[in-house]
Image (cartoon, rainbow, N blue to C red):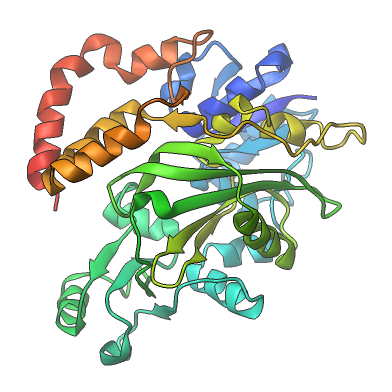
Length: 387
């Protein structure tokens, strides 16, 4: 059976590397080249944009008439498959049902699920014209109700904004398009970047969790509210309990990751969001001995090994994002900068782009040496603009 990986960002690169032993049955599909295009793994195919439904459907029927197992690494392809699953029934697609998947795009729905199932989560409010701004539990964090609309307006790395009081809230609402970019306000979870955790799982069609993996963020970019630039594999009984409760309560299907943050104010793990696809650091699980893509590929086989054990304390790192984050920590003070250096030192590491058997993505990441001339200026600009 063919394995078809959609998306060639580093998320897709990790899936390709995990499935490298499939050889000629492995395909890499995207409408742009991106970093995984230079990987040695998978047949590289350029497809129509996932916003052009009929063109992409026709292309898939022509390219994969005999079907194949689908692996999704980006939101635009996830939305495409959700919209067109009936016309794409010839492909083996393991994602939540259409109603649930559409609902999961709504962060307020995720909050309501947590409240109904006794899963810890910060208080959440929809930002509307009639919002009672005086009663919000300041400070609050503003973020998109639906991630794609938010990213189109604010960019992919900006998770949101911290609002400290009613006056700031009124100013933000006057200056930002919350009516066209739906927004929610959440009570701010108190704690440093390393208080962020992820529970990652694959739940099959029988309702069985066949693989689960946990990680801790060590460095984020942007700092405070960003993407995991450096993460460490961990095991936590409480995170396991919360993650299982969430995935089972909504009858989840497929691969997904739930991000939690430990709140220093009450010592509880609280759900930030659930992302219904492969997460950016997915190859970290493979390197730790838990190959999610291969387990998903073999999930039709009753004899698949679904061992829950994996190596802990292995760090995954995107070096470019870590460098940019460190410049922001430096602006906050030498103590913050040194604490990040200390937390990264002395640990076994793997890297987002570099792999000893697949080096070309790393060369592309550093722009074949040009990055060493550009990076000092990029870091200086980041340092000057960071808050």
